[in-house]
Image (tube, rainbow, N blue to C red; front, side, top):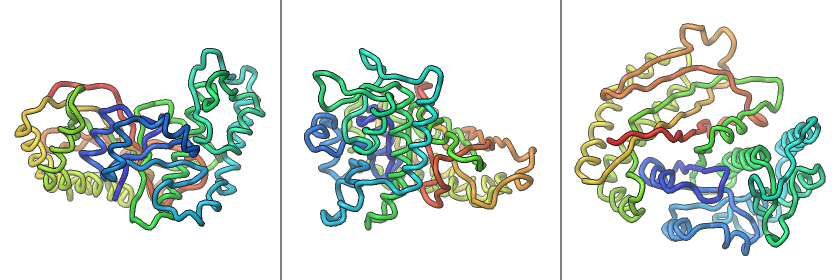
Length: 344
């Protein structure tokens, strides 16, 4: 199972929720560990999806709120040593600026207490990067940059640890509609760099128009389950093959073209049969390449590729990224949901 882990906010936009229900096995977000604060932060729609096992709340203090036995939770209160080292180094860098990103009144952004762990909150306050909000005991005032840094780093760590610790076969894929948050997740943590494909999926993933009730999306998900799963599997296979066969991206497209075109055609027929208004959003996918990739292995003429599937263009470019923390063998994809749209 592959679940979208939305960040940096607790409640994803409705269109992101809808996309997770159509093309993934559900959605997750980073939430406060404190039950009372969490109850106030998580919206009604997410609570209803949680009852249907389509939403998973995650936090650093309790790790996975569902699926981790109570005796094991005591071992999850602190992050691993490397994760803590990376975060502390980033906080020191921000605090050492000539003009550090200080909390403001009114707040530029908020951070729910216990969302990123008490140890981290204490360190933010000590460095002057966060301040408790008078009259709002469950919130901190922070800058947008600090919010992006903290939650993006926690989301990446949780995506790694959840798949490792929870015996449900689920993976959590970082996903955001914030360009700054996406860049923060890949910001430098060490001097070592990595290479990645950055692919724009364009019009392959339509979503219902704004105002469409989630109940309608759930009904579509069930009625056209075969078409939905076929497209989802084809896209995920494309991303996985691009990661492994990084030296021959054109061959990857050639091998999967028929499968993708058939999946897209079947899904588009289902969309038309639904008689609902649909939009096409631009989704950028960052696919970290296999660890062996680097330097001369990716020649300049392989740095850009245009593939066409079912009349829709898929733009692929290679770029250098610097992941936060150590390289992860799993959870290779970070999705950026852009705001451009067009009527179907």
